[in-house]
Length: 375
Image (cartoon, rainbow, N blue to C red; front, top):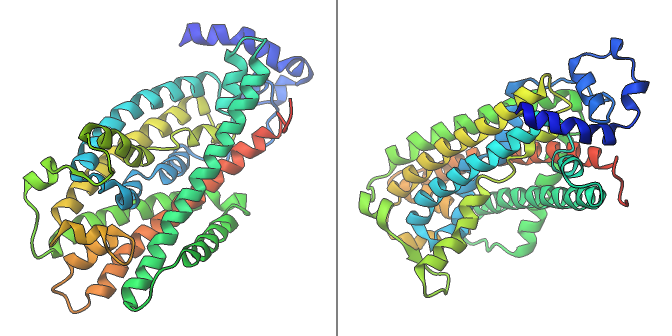
């Protein structure tokens, strides 16, 4: 890393310009001086701890929540085989992505993340264009991520209503209304910056507690269970592709979504002390926790499927995991209420996930004001 840092100094000087000369280092702490070397002044309070940064990072990625939402399409693109082995495949890829992000975040601890790195590492001829293009791609990705999370929670809430009102038919506008309500609700949490570290920590605890509750409760109440062959060796291809390999590769987008946004923690580099150490811990911690929770959640849910697997796909709720909960509680007089309660854990986790996504997007947007909308 020392050689990497040495090579960075020359590039950083071009970016920083005269900022070091104009800064009075005697009034800057180590983090602010490091930020000044990158060409920026310390404008934001470093109110996040490594735990709260990890909380934001994991709350956005939230791999087990991603798997529960991705079942909507994933069960038709490979079924249990896709989820169980796809998680392992994407986890290995995510380790490489996480290590690369950690190295860059350690060398260049800027909230701009990718757009700043592109500016520094690209040649002078292309640095502005690379930074501009990367910044817009990063912002667009953050926008679509927030949209997909809000949509997943909207489907879950409308599905719960349909399950408790069997005569109700879900229409597209119902989901759109739920989407907007949930999006606005999560937005207000980001209007008060002082509370974000606490909100992030609560979101992390909510996710882990919800994971533990579902992991233990659903298999325990299910009257019957699938065998190991179904969980580890059943491949389902309803994609329209004749080749199973193509269907599996296409289906990997579902498990990949469960490990998306690993860069989230990098955009909080100017709000945490010692970001060159804390951001890598948060990134790799997100990957590790994500794999453990997602893999065991997937195994637990597939073992707990009661009845015909196709019933989950054709559920009127449009939410396979909700139908799975309902079937698992089929022998209970309160099966509908119980399924809604279990799904509420996923909804609560999703709202925390969306709030954290808004947090990262706002941090990224604030940094992109420095490169403006034009060159």
